[in-house]
Amino acid sequence: MRQFNLEEAKAGKPVCTLDGRKVRILCFDRKNCNPSSIVGLIEEEFYESIHSWRTNGITVYNTGKHTDDIFMV
Image 1: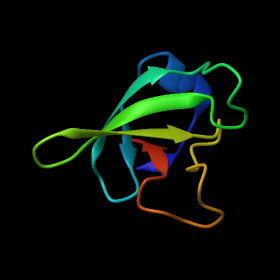
Image 2 (image 1 turned 135 degrees about the vertical axis):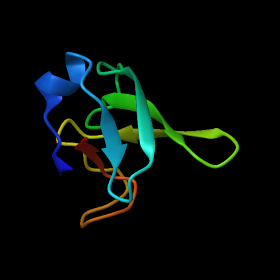
Image 3 (image 1 turned 90 degrees about the horizontal axis):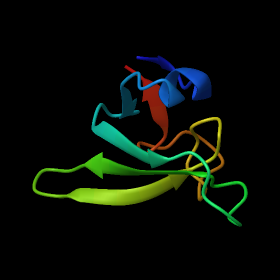
Image 4 (image 1 turned 120 degrees about the vertical axis):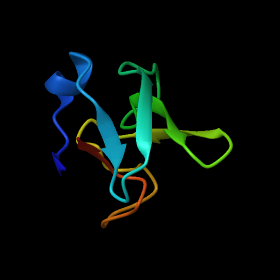
């Protein structure tokens, strides 16, 4: 796992959360929601939960490290 890279993620490279859950990015250009322009789904045990992130992969509601932050696989 390494630091989130926006360009690689846009190119379709795999992304996961800090704790290793798979992430499916839905869009990188959510309108009128700066700074949370990335929207995606985090794979949970029986469902996918929807989340949004800043362009650096950090969750919007967090200022430090969080298990929902995203990284490159």
